[in-house]
Image (tube, rainbow, N blue to C red; front, top):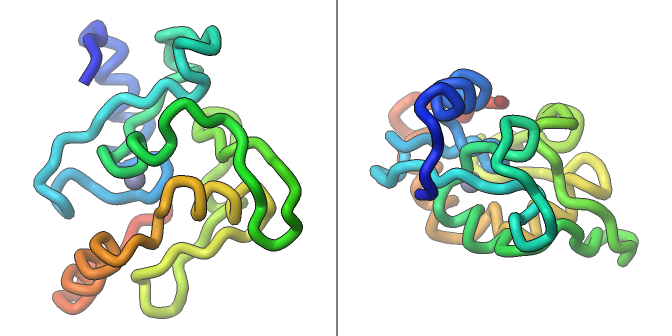
Length: 140
Ligand SMILES: [Zn+2]
């Protein structure tokens, strides 16, 4: 995890409620500490400032890499990835009925679900185990 001043870290923790800002996975779900994602990567001029940072699980952060755009699997159109500081999670994503699969509601949501591999079999298995003991996935 990159270095962050303590006050900035606290602000992010409060804003993201200790969830991955993309797939909503918590540290408790995976046993892995959250990473700090530069929404626009530093290599593309993204600053280390609240408006360009979010908490992301290791998996989302790695799949996201340096991408800021991806293809909507429905239309084939290239669209921006979900921006957790400028957009509302619930406008772009929802859980399926089982609470284990994320559904993209918009072109941005669909592109982000695919680009970040948010329904990969390993995390869906983890979600299934948590749901089976009464956990409900957060909706950020
Ligand atoms: Zn995630």
